[in-house]
Length: 369
Ligand code: FAD
Image (cartoon, rainbow, N blue to C red; front, side, top):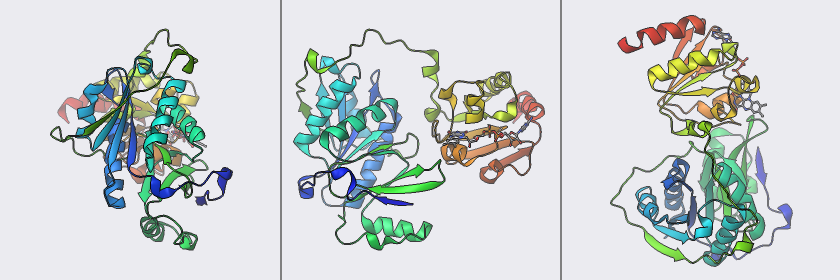
């Protein structure tokens, strides 16, 4: 599937040559840089190399007293950091962040801007895109730069006619690929006439660079012009719920349960198993929809994309939307009583049988494994 939004939305054409470099929205929570931002800095480096020339990767760090994260951004691949510190930015607000970020983009004209497809990234990016009158591709799982790269990809994986991508396409075109129509098709979207080219990217799909604390980044300080009236919301209190502690995208071992568990009680077994192996509990959408477990545990296209070292799929059939969120795990161990279950096609180890017999045995003998 191939979408080119050339004439889309009557967007105003801009001088493409005025734009350069790659920006990554460096999302932080409680003084920690989010993993997805580290992944995007790594992806930014890869794209910068493909674009050649002196394309640089910048992290955009916003908040109150966040300068201590400059070194982390450098360690994960930023050549430079735009640092916007202001008390009004201490908590994320749509108005405050969108205003400051939009003004920075208008001033410095980046060619590409990447955001994590987190709650904040999904809120911020479309606001900024609308204010700048440019395009945005949401929830990307693959990025390529240049028409040549895309043609090579298309020749390998699709029967796509690439003749529509003619010489008028810019060499620095960002090919933004995302699942569409329930994950049954991959749509590649380009933004040929406006800048910046902007995408939100799913956590867990891009590679971080090797962390190097000796790397240095230049710092460009921004003095945000924000006042009370710019922000229509007030953060009175931040209440952290226990469920916010579930961090599937960072987990090294995930124990996921599906409809095959049969009841909500089945997740008690998942918790015991997870505690034994030092893992985090995940779930299929069927289990979430049944009300057995909260949505924050959902793995898949409409849940979290994960890439753990070990993924246990227990009583999960392996629907394409579930696979979309876990098939890049290093090792997949599937337990299912149906030997024909599609999950076995992506599994490294397949255990055919009743999970209620197999998992207690695994728990009992785990220390000997
Ligand atoms: P089922 O498909 O019902 O599979 C249950 C499995 O358990 C079966 O294979 C069965 O053999 C096995 N089983 C039963 N009893 C036992 C037992 N005692 N021991 C061992 N095995 C047993 N799904 C997701 O997971 N994540 C998503 O993000 C997601 N997004 C979606 C987005 C869209 C737009 C759509 C249309 C669907 C989405 N889905 C998603 C739903 C997806 O299509 C499947 O319906 C869902 O993944 C099925 O969940 P399941 O494997 O737990 O259930």
